[in-house]
Length: 170
Image (cartoon, rainbow, N blue to C red; front, side, top):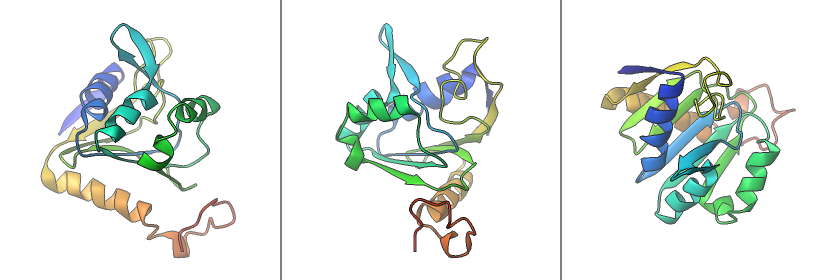
């Protein structure tokens, strides 16, 4: 286990993790915004990279609590293949922030899937965030099981938020 914070979240979770996924990339976040990542000399939407990952066969799943930002949706529209290659689930109760890469390591902590949360922004504009990266198989498996229980809607029958849930799983 290793503690990561602020800019280290971008380097260790985004650059060394998400962008290098080979089999699966599962992300849970309360908020989804169009985070930009450095590609060569420019910053581009992370969804450009996700489109490449999806073409390479990486399974991408996103659980989020609310409608993604307009910029996220606009960037996604530039990659129509993501509408089928990247599975997304809205669950209004989602507040956990987790990234799982290839079933080998995971991040969990306070950072939402936003530039300010994941440390992409400058020192003066990013949030103060902290989390842990784990690579012990039992801890990664526990986070994957938790993610999967939300993904399959195990909590849906007794959730209590059906009136605000856009797609309850029944």
